[in-house]
Image (cartoon, rainbow, N blue to C red; front, side, top):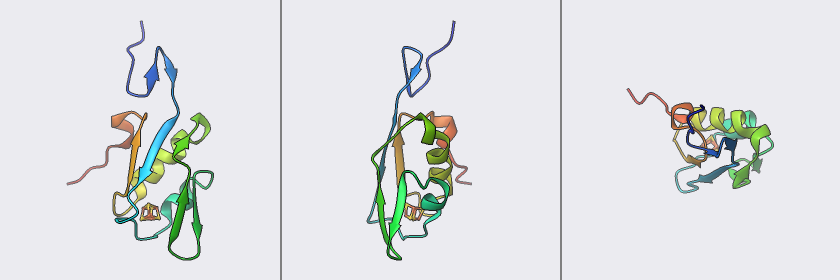
Length: 88
Ligand code: SF4
């Protein structure tokens, strides 16, 4: 029997919901490079993003969260282990 993990609803993965703290974001654009379907830059510093990402973008979003140099992206619906970064 499969053990449900965060992001699973009765064994079915749910879309990833995300929020970017735009006060923290400094426009480095790593997220736009790693998940271009979800994050786009408008001009040099203005970030636009979709607050929900589907399964096709899941891995990209997880990489974007890990790559953001100021930890501005928060996700819900992705496994905690997948998005955890080593703060040491
Ligand atoms: S990687 Fe982080 S700091 Fe850079 S644009 Fe994305 S959210 Fe902003």
